[in-house]
Length: 108
Ligand SMILES: [Zn+2]
Image: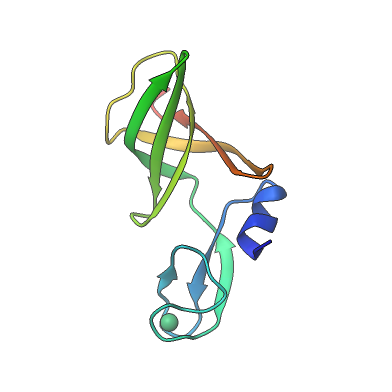
């Protein structure tokens, strides 16, 4: 299990940032994919935007983007049909064999 998965399991959404060149390393890794510097783990901003969504059995699934670089898939709790590009926030994350993310629209 990676450090990313471990944090997720504890309900924390983290990313890796290079200590040397300050690059946000995504997908998360212990070493920078540009300069091979060591990374430090830090929380990701929980406010993101909606990139894509689909609806299956009354449940919305979506791809959300955070800090303009980090894209994750999850479910979207919404009673209305969302719009691409809309602001959303992460309300829950976890790891149960698979990565789990739950989002909510940020306009209410
Ligand atoms: Zn680097």
